[in-house]
Length: 446
Image (tube, rainbow, N blue to C red):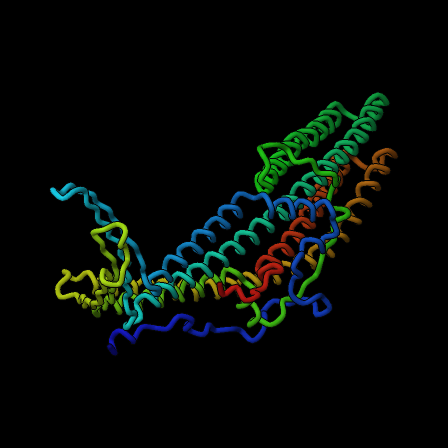
C-alpha cells in the first residue's frame, strides 16, 4: 500500500529558478505586459482585421481546437470507471407442449462497480484532465504563434514595398546622373568610360526591383496561408511601414512569465499528467475489486410477468490480483517514471528558454533603437554628400567616381534604414510573443 501511494501527486512540480530582474534594459515609461489585442498597438486597422480573420480561419488553430475536443472526450472516458456500469437483458421464447402452446420471458438488470481502493481509476482521470489542460494550453500556443506570424509577415510585405520604392528612387537618381554624364560627354568633358560606368550603375539599380517585387508577392502568399485562404495573393492597402507605429512594452516581473506563457502552462500540465500516470502504474500492482449484482424476472406465463414470486436477486464480489505477468507491470511503472523525468526536463527547459527569449528580445529592441538613431544621422549626411558631389561634378570640380561612390553609399543607407525599421518592429513582435502575447490563464483547469 505504501508503495502504491508513493507516486508524486498531480500538480507537484519543482520550483524553477526565477531571476530577480531582466538582464536587458527596457523603458520604464512603457506599458506593462502586452494587452489582449496587442497587435492593435501597431496602429493599423488593416492588420487588426487580418489578425481577426487568421485567428478564426487558420487551419493549424482549427486542428488544435479539434485536439482539445479529443482530449475532452478522453477525459470523460477516463472518468467512466469511477461510476457503476449498468446493463439490461431480455429474452422471450415460445415452445409447443402436448397441453398446448406455452411462452416464457426473461428480463434482467446487471450492475457492476470496481472499487478504486488503490486510486488507479482516479489517477487515470487525473492524467486525462491534465492532458486536456495541456491540449488547451497548446491551442493557445498555436494561436499566439499564428498571430505573431500574421503580424510579422504583414510587416515584411510592407517593408518590401518600402524597399521597392527606395530602389525606384535610386534608379531615378542614377538616371538623372546618367543624363548629366551624357550631357558632359556631348560637351567633351566626360569620357566613354564615364558613360559606361553610369549606364552600368543604372542597370544594376534596375535589376534589384524584379526580385523585390517577387519577394513581396511571396510574402502575400505566405500571409494567405496563415489566414486560411486558398493559395492567392492577399490585397494589402498600405504602401509601406510609414504609418506603422512602434509600440513600447515593458515585461513586468520575471515571475509573472510563468503564468503568462501558454507553452509553460502546457509543460506544467504535461508534467501533471505524467505524475498521475506514475500513480496509475503503481496502483496496477494491487488487486482490482469488482462488485457486481443482478436482478431479474422470469415467467412461464406471459400474463403473469413480473409477479413477486418470479423476482431473482444476486450479489457478488470478485478479487483479481496479478501474480506473474513477465514484468509487464514493473516495466510500465518504469516507463511512466522515465516519461515523467523527460517531461520534468522539458518543463525546466521551457522555463529557461522563456526567460532567455524575453531577455533577447529586450536586448534587440534596445540595440536597434540605438542603431536607428545613428543610422538616421548617417542618412542625412549621405544625402548631403550625394547632392554636393552631383553639384560639383556638374561644375567640373569633381570626377564621376566620387558621384558614383556617394550614390552607392546613399542607396545602401536607405536600404539599411528600411531593414532597420522592419527589424525593430519584428523585435517588438518577438517580445510580445516571448511574453505570451496578451494571453493570461483565466482558470482553464477543465
